[in-house]
Amino acid sequence: MSWYILILAGVFEIGWAIGLEYSDGFSKPLPTLGTVVALIISMLLLAQAVKDLPVGTAYAVWTGIGAVGTASLGIILFDEPATLVRILCIGVIVVGIVGLHFASGGH
View (cartoon, helix red, strand yellow):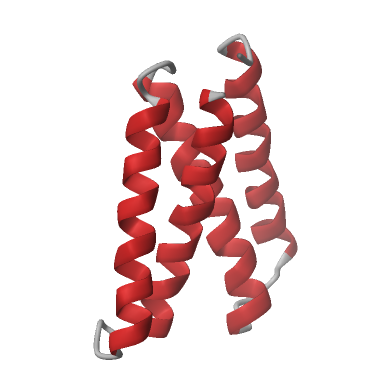
């Protein structure tokens, strides 16, 4: 169950990271509120996940999910460059996340 919680925490990390763009430096109230709420939920879920998972593994996976999701959505939503090198680097992060999952026993 902790892995599912951790994945959900990563999804909310993507939400608050993308929310930073929409909040325009916290100058827009509704996007700012959504960003802050997503940040709080992400942290609370991460805190739950580290009750059962090693903190180093959980943090690396959490940030990895956030990095992959935010970089991918940056390409889709904000017309950030989708170069081959960038896509390959995102893929390397995904491999690292999966590797950490299996290295920790995948429970």
